Length: 530
Image (tube, rainbow, N blue to C red):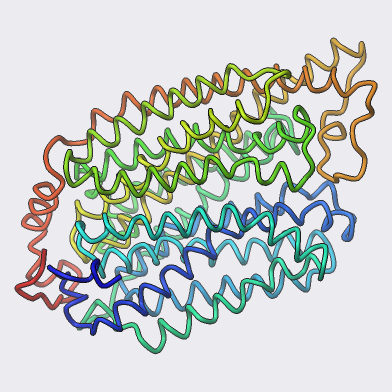
């Protein structure tokens, strides 16, 4: 850590002791770990939860409710962190996340669990983006390239440890502990931030909070995610609830744009999309997030249905991808300093295209080793993309807009992911229904065939037929993901050319980094600002 903090410092880090920088970084790492491990640890426990609370029909909404609340709140938290300070907003978000964790652990029904997961999702929408913003305040771009390996290691550890920890807690204690386990780590992060962290933003004034922007933003995102998550699963795509949700989302989206153009302090300043590196980062991550999540949502199910793995084994099937992401993130951050954002983003997007194409080669006879090799290629590309676009977005703006820029990239990636999952699910389930109906000569309920209870395995007599049908259906979804990844690759031309340091310095000069910001805050700077 000492080698990272040596040399040039950001204005914020210059105000802190070395110990203060290290302890604040530890809090950031704890927050990132919690945000990363939640999905994998809960997924492993879900079969037991469903059996205990008797709510298979609400299974998907345990994840969808969390996702809906998280995505909708991400840009709001990012903007609040810029307006009211990182420290207060981080403490508020982490507190909500831990409150949601406690409530989830006490849930006595699936309905209550879904609602409490939504509360947890609201907090999660703050934890990762604001933690990333604090990191960007602490470290220069050159330092963040070095510390990227540490952050990537945290994500990889969460990916590897999550399934094991979830299985252990569920088997040895209770499924409720997969939520309670968040408390000690979260409390450590809260204490460190509350006691050690010094607020980066100084001399704040009273803001004109954009309530109309918040309401319309939450409205159109929640309705869009609801329609995407419900369509084809709970309701037909052409049903009134789904079509109505899409229509209402479109109306609220247009209203949101009009409100933001006129607001004194918009929730999402639309002029940010005039910054080439930030605009390119949001577009590229949206398409590649769509491709990535569309693939990842069905890989564990492929493991169970086609490869015949246990629930724990299926949860661990993504470990090669996560390890490759760690390598890609760590290496990509350093490559950015040498060859620039555009080259790294292009290489990463190319690897994602190759990885998704390789996945289209999978059949019912493919083995786990073959799948792991394909996932290594995909994961490496994703690591390059997500790290380089995050750095590009953060270094294209000055401190007053760091939070909203970080939130925008996370928001577009997650929103693209939600669209990708819905698209992949629609293609896969339609094809699977056709194939199973043709194989058995009657309509088959795919929800029962693929039910995640883990207690009633597919009968041996029809296992091969189901595996063939599922592999064929998934083949179509992988082609869709590959096509979307190609669009993302084409969009990399939007990323500006040039050295990363040059683009950062130009952005800071244009933002008048050493003056009073348009929102009235002042920022202490020193001669050591990189």
